[in-house]
Length: 106
Image (cartoon, rainbow, N blue to C red):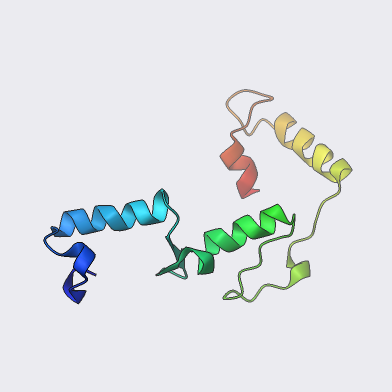
């Protein structure tokens, strides 16, 4: 961006340009990422994920070949039974305690 000669970056150091871009991504949601490329926020994966969450719909990345049925959905009863089994299994430092990050990997 700095090499494009854009007037709003004139006189800015590379560090300042990087900081401005980072703020545009993380704070202002002007820019985002899709498949590792920087895009306008409205076209970013984060924006699409937020829209899916608002509509309570699953996020399916169109760039990845995912079938809607490729991830089976558990019932609440199945979820309770599996979590109960995990907590009793002794896979944790203390019985009955498991890190959320470990649950997400299961």
